[in-house]
Length: 269
Image (cartoon, rainbow, N blue to C red; front, side, top):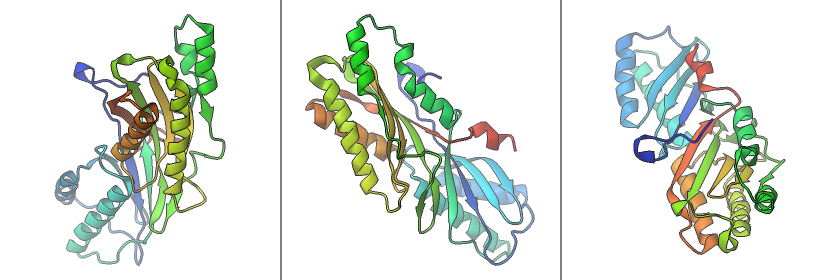
């Protein structure tokens, strides 16, 4: 599992979510026809959402979307439910949805794979100085109070919102120089606390784990559902650069969604 790159070397985002909704007053109607979904997909496309899988039952509707990094899980939940409800009402089904929905971030890799990948970063590195390797190992940490399999709950739904973030230094500058290493790790801890302050439940957002490499950092994060991956990645970059007192990190931060099961699980339905 490597860092995804696009043509020209630019890092790319890998963002996908499943959305689940339940009927309120009566079962959902039978699966609508292709014209119904063509019109609905056009409306979702205007929101930046691309439907890539679906599950339609009389007691549950679930869609999987690819989304741009500027879309938050809460925005996706509102547009998925609102546009579907409107489309169904136009067909004569007017019973509405339960208030609460569920949104889960999905990726090609599972939670177990991503966390193992982050934890083993130094095992993969070809570094000659054992003291430097030891200092990087000591900078890594995990927050045992954050269980990424638990959702963040709000008045309107439950959100499993996990992000793998990778921030790379400008010019591949070594983080161990100029005493940047302790500043980086302290900045991540402080930033994690700010993410948690944005949560309203006992299951708080925050950084689950951090791995520091010579010229980049890997994080596994449970995000606040109101913030997009772009907002979260931008907040991390700003926190790191402010702590360094220098534009140490590249403006582009890779963000990828993941969960306890892979995207292929929903595509195979």
